[in-house]
Amino acid sequence: MSIARPLSQARVDGRTKSARQFRDLCADLSGRLGTAPQDALTRTAIHRAAGLILSAETLTSRLAAGAAVDPGALVLVTDAANRSLGILGLAAALEKSK
Image 1 (spheres, rainbow, N blue to C red):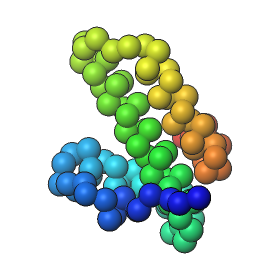
Image 2 (image 1 turned 135 degrees about the vertical axis):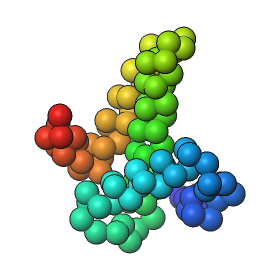
Image 3 (image 1 turned 90 degrees about the vertical axis):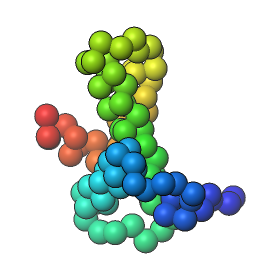
């Protein structure tokens, strides 16, 4: 099985607001794990969780601003983000922060 190249090597403009938020989320998730992830699978799981969290936040912000948002998409992305945190073992930390 081949794993895509790390996002640090992908052709992504890191100057956008979304890119900064993504980096911050990745750093926060890595920090909550206690160490910098050394293996590609953990880094990929962190990137996936951060992307899903960012997507859920974007949809929630649009909803709060009065824009039309597909409620099914919001539920789907939020649930996927929560599951990805569970895979990382961070679901308990999410519950404690509420």
